[in-house]
Image (cartoon, rainbow, N blue to C red; front, side, top):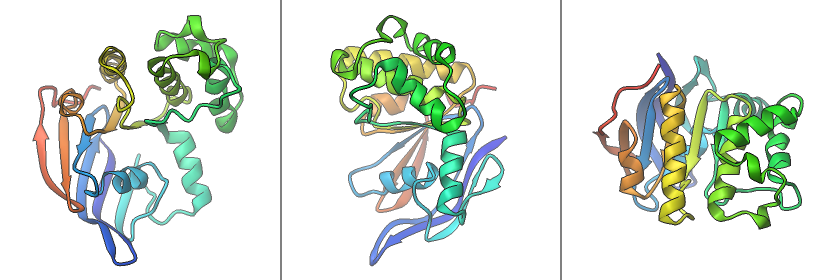
Length: 226
């Protein structure tokens, strides 16, 4: 079953064409990587998939719903309800503990539940650091808090933008290990990355060049999990 479909997607900012006639489907349970040089359209593509921007032309289907021309309010609701976002820069609230940062995501979705938030932290190996502020956590631990925050509302799609970009090799391996576990459990994951090793763990790698899909590489674990 297709969770995401992009049909003839183009995006222009004035005279700059960031995406040109992009067609792509992502199956439920698939792990997809998006690569390309700076200016290739990766960020624009991520923003459209993540309901943070709209295409100039073309159609986007997410979970069977055409979201291409939704209002900003409806896109915000879709992003909140169906997408778990993980950023390179973490975006944690500095004066809140790890547990409270996860609960903030619950607040915007439904009602905060400390037990559920603690379980999400436990899934990423941080139950013992729940009461620590971001300043008391390493970069790898902060990224794992971001992953727990992304998981707390049981999203249909996990969308990660350079999730290992600020991490050393040891913490990169921990984060990729978490993604592997989530994929094995049936999560649909899209990772935007510059790192070929990170992309190599995905089932497919989409390579963008000049706003177009230059090629799609089938990797070692191509089959989505149910």
